[in-house]
Length: 324
Image (cartoon, rainbow, N blue to C red; front, side, top):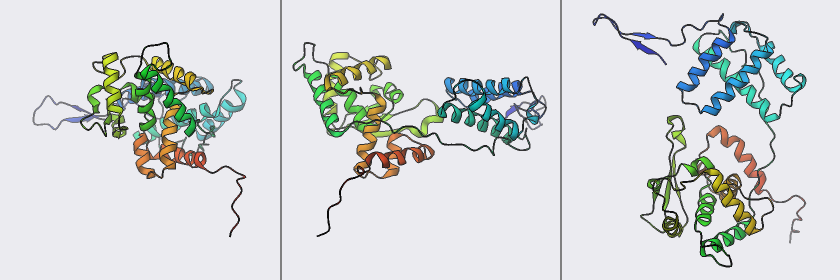
């Protein structure tokens, strides 16, 4: 980003000032790190993301022992650093942490190269090894049935000593049918919900951060959800946000549902998100439509789709019918 410097003389063209003009190949690594932090903040990266990037670069700075000029950091230095992280540091480095720290190097040095500060990107040749994470957990169909039986019981007060509570059913059906993330759920406002057609209510997932607005989407809710919403509003009287409580509070709600439904592995936002994805994928929803429904980028979908393929695959060892 450049800043226009206004001239003292009106006939002169305003000059563009490069906010990173002071960075050169001789700039010490800590100076470049500080300017990188400014860049991330300017681009509206989340605070936790900024802290993670700078924390990872801080480990690199300590490994390089001091403040070397950024132009002297070579690909060999970075390769040795990644090897040290994994085998010689003396602290555990999980595959996920390894991948994140490698991503930090690639983003940081690519930024310096794009600015023209470095003639070449020393992190470009580094190989990004994908993390082999376990397949995510999701609910089987009979478990979904048990969960819905439990939330309906909680909504009506049937066979329970507590008062009728429509919130568990509202929350579970919302997550089960939309597959939204926890932070997206917490960001829903009443103004984002369209119940003008009770048979097909719609929720609009919105983002205040301009960088995340590509994730915005309209999602259809199940028939009858508008009636559950009305019952919920009578009990809880929300004024702005749909759920005017903490995310931890809703996690407790899901834990209570899991207990009543007899789910040994519990119930979480992520589990319901994957359950929604698996059910839609198994029902042959168009892959790109499902990607957009889940709010995923094309790059993230490249990691998600193979997992869905494996999750819905028929069990191994199944006997095939003999041909007639």
